[in-house]
Image (cartoon, rainbow, N blue to C red; front, side, top):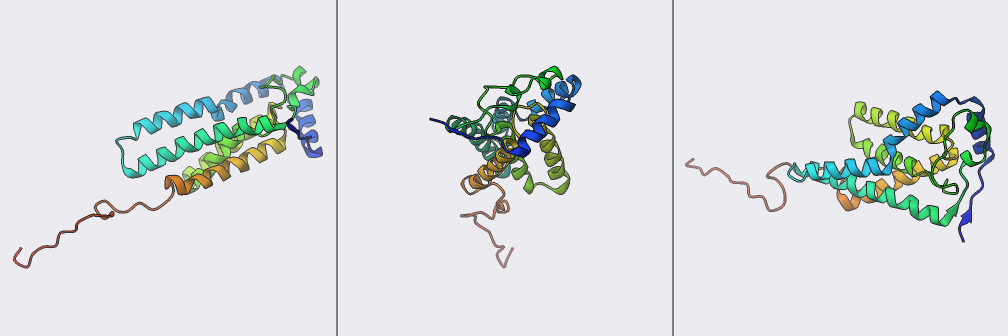
Length: 202
């Protein structure tokens, strides 16, 4: 039997604030933005990039392997956890929120953890190897997408935080397996490379 997780007091206060203050325009915008972390969209992107990188450099192949494996992992783990934990989504507990434009999201008792937030957490963790400008863009967009899950009342705030942490942890645990983030040897200097020396006559 699934283990039931009650929302925290802070979760309830945040959900009530959203129910009271949101509007249809905000909810429509959040509904569009939240697609940025949909597992089907991200799996398609990761698979497409993986295929494009098969003839690329060793670094590109390593990065694409890592992205695809991580995306598969953070797509599977939420489904497994939702079968163990039982938590009602906040959108099923409000009438005022629906009057203000809040839609119905997913299965009613699949609140914990947020799968979208797991994808965001994994991408945010993977972005730590990027230059500061790229890293900040990923983090900013990721934070916006994660917040949409709270604005849509699809998840409690604690579900989103837990999902982001689990996603980041999954990405880090997969790095030793894929080699992501490790320094690549210079071309021609890898194991088994032969360095020819000029002869004295030449």
